Length: 129
Image 1 (cartoon, rainbow, N blue to C red):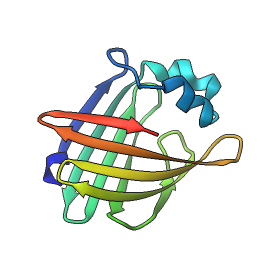
Image 2 (image 1 turned 60 degrees about the vertical axis):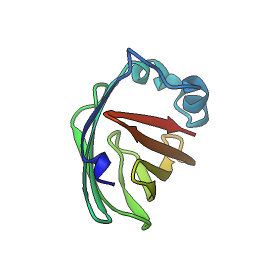
Image 3 (image 1 turned 30 degrees about the vertical axis):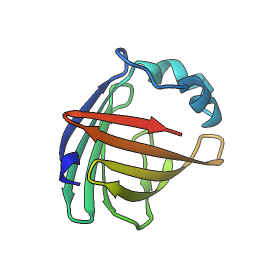
Image 4 (image 1 turned 60 degrees about the horizontal axis):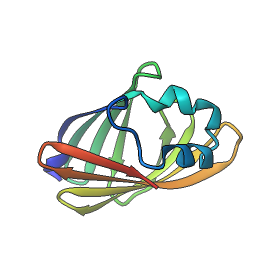
């Protein structure tokens, strides 16, 4: 899990998400697709045992948001965009975690999805499904 410690940067203009448009449509964010498409994201991880402190910022949104998450326990808070979220973090191995997330979107509907983060060397791959 210590492999996740540090700051990770994603420059959206260099490599987009696979099936990005489909994911955004399913999340009810059709009108926001273009503003998020090329956004740069910074994620900082501080892992201490089963407690993960994660700070996210995004170039298309103001500020940053810090969450303190205990592995295996549901965590509820606001996302960087102000939407309600519920997250359960599961550690698969030293180089992979899965976040089972629910977001209460602008239309009032809760949407469920998973985020898989994998570390390989000095690179993090993030897959949303």
